[in-house]
Length: 165
Image 1 (cartoon, rainbow, N blue to C red):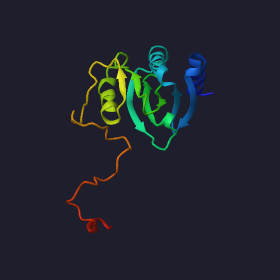
Image 2: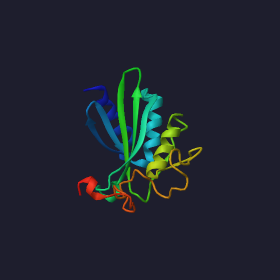
Image 3: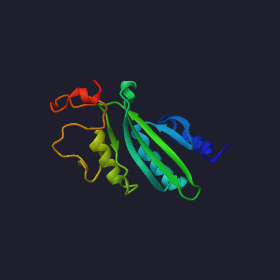
Image 4: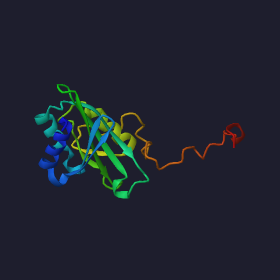
């Protein structure tokens, strides 16, 4: 048994129904949890398992997934002592993209959560300054959602013959 297999068993045992699945993606163990329990899992991993470094936090949109799993939030944590890296994922529907903030656990989550809000529309409950970070406040959409045509159909300055059409 590897250390990460043991960790998976511990997480399954400790979090019960909140634990959904465990997979392996290259050299990462990937654990999927219920989105409402992810903050408790992250707190446990930091305080009890030594995953003290938040490498990244990001959203993703999977429009071809089942509507209840259309959006995903991914957290990547690193244990600097053992050099173990893990990913945590939570899937959710478009009409319930509310997550608990983890800014109180990792300061670095501040801008990452704002970016996920800005580009995908995730709402982090309890975040100290949930507002757009890179896009204009006037934007009434989230540009990384795969809900829009790839090209701006309103452009009239484009001649299709230059694009092989």
